[in-house]
Amino acid sequence: EKNNLVRKLTANGDTGFHTLRWDLKVQQPMAAKSRSKSASAPSLQYASKGKYKLKLIRGGENSEVELEIK
Image 1 (cartoon, rainbow, N blue to C red):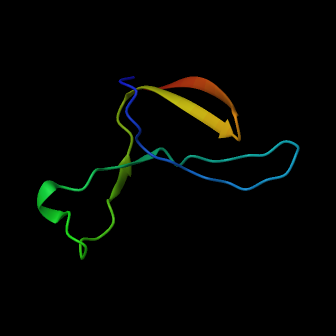
Image 2: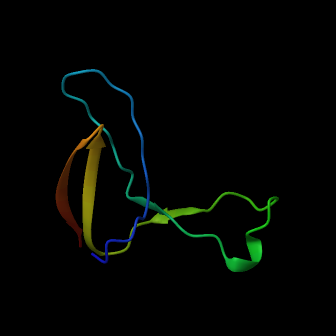
């Protein structure tokens, strides 16, 4: 809803129809204290209730769809 990137997923594919499943998990940013090189990767947590925009990008083309988690 605020146009913040919450997770980036990538997939490979050729021409045709494809399916990409989002497990409704978002990537939590690392805390300021843990931004050292030895820090673990940011944790994944389920998305909160609210409106989200899914943006699909392939080359120079893109499309968007909105969804709401209630």
